[in-house]
Amino acid sequence: MKTSRRKFLQKSALFTAGAGMLSTASWSHPYISPNEKINVGLIGCRSQGFYVLREFLQTGSVNCLGICDVDQQVLEEKAAALKNDFQQLPKLYRDFRKMLEDKAIDAVIIGTPDHWHCLQTVYSCQAGKDVYVEKPLANSIGECNLMLEAARRYNRIVQVGQQQRSSPVWKGAMEYIQAGHIGKLRKANIWANFHYGIGARKQPDEPVPAGVDFDLWLGPAPERSFNPARFHGNWRHFWDYGGGLMTDWGVHLLDMALWAKEDMTEPEQVMAYGSNLSFEEYSRETYDTMSVIFPKKDYVINWEHAAGHQTGPYDMSYGIAFVGDKATVVADRGDWTVKTGDSKETEGFMTLAKDYKKQSSWSDVGNHVRDFLSSVKSRESPSCSVEVGRNVALYAHMANIAVRSGEGSLSWDVGRQSFTNSKAGDSLIMSPYRESWRLSSV
Ligand SMILES: NC(=O)c1ccc[n+]([C@@H]2O[C@H](COP(=O)([O-])OP(=O)(O)OC[C@H]3O[C@@H](n4cnc5c(N)ncnc54)[C@H](O)[C@@H]3O)[C@@H](O)[C@H]2O)c1
Image (cartoon, rainbow, N blue to C red; front, side, top):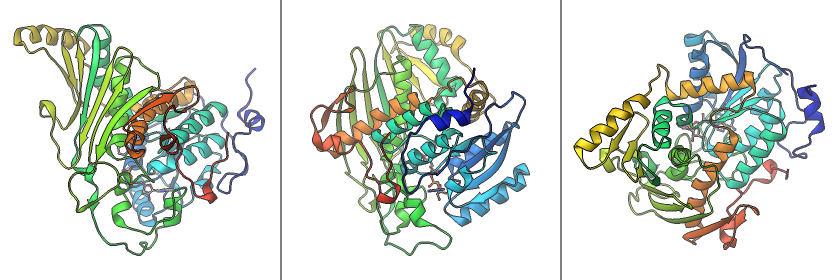
């Protein structure tokens, strides 16, 4: 016999009381029938979160019951767009904990900056909601581990916003590689060069804009003055809120390198160089320049980025070259191709590749959203589960930690979930939380 969601919750006591925590778990939708519409709420509305919500609504199988943001202007703009474009009239919230009290909401989309993902996912799971959380899974390894545990304990579907996992283009490339057409896959060379990786121009601190609850924007992160160069969109270049290009794009592309090998193992070693070498008039803590090696048993993953410009190998600003014994597959989100260095030989590989090329009338995010919605109903694992999102986030975070700790090279003890050789590295495993938002241990 199935345990009801409410009973299950009563049995589990994941987090003991913390000031920010929901006092009771609410759970009103034990089962959703295949024909029933799914009720969603969005936390963090400005850019990606709202884009994802639009994809949810475009499926025609979703109602939006609530949207939440700490910036009143963002909230009102998005509410007007939802009314105009989708005839949706969600309730508006400033505090996500209030929205989670709505028992009619089945699933929550989390589109906040990375430093919020863990708390909001954990609280959503506790409240009995399924979760579509943007990538990277969290802003630290310790938070990723807590989220995995929460999803499992509360038996929730958690889809991580690495939409490549639902992309027909990448699926085709993976099937082609895994069928052995390029021979043994030995190496993945990844590059991600983007202008935005240098951050915004340096500017003086300002008063907090009217209508913004900046303390709730900071949440678990340390108290800090308000500066537009660390706020909307620009937060990703500061360690308290994000991990720079290494995590922003790292989790997308490292995930593809792992998928090609069907590898779900944690990184055991990382060697990394990172520095801020250019664009001093721009504001950031994360590195504009990085080169990283992840050695695996029979495979090596190389990562590199140079922010502030936007070109790279094969004239692509980002991509992956999957190097096999016989040929190399070069891929980005739009397409993939095969290179051999010999035009006649290449023709043969490309003819074969045609059978693996797939297209979709939906965007990658649209496909990813549909995959999530189908998991919410079937209770099957989604294409980018919390396990997949956690595993790749460990790679990206470890690269940053290798540099931030000053070690350059680190080894990871999978059993102990700590570094084998570095107290400085260990000190960066968990984000520091402000007392009022501190997570109790599991
Ligand atoms: N999957 C992708 O391709 C992709 C693309 C872009 C961004 N992202 C991810 O999406 C997330 C959001 O990025 P963005 O570029 O949209 O950031 P953004 O700064 O543009 O928007 C974040 C929004 O969250 C709001 N917010 C902050 N704290 C909040 C809180 N406690 N409660 C409610 N709202 C809060 C902010 O006010 C803002 O409106 C990040 O994790 C990012 O990595 C993913």
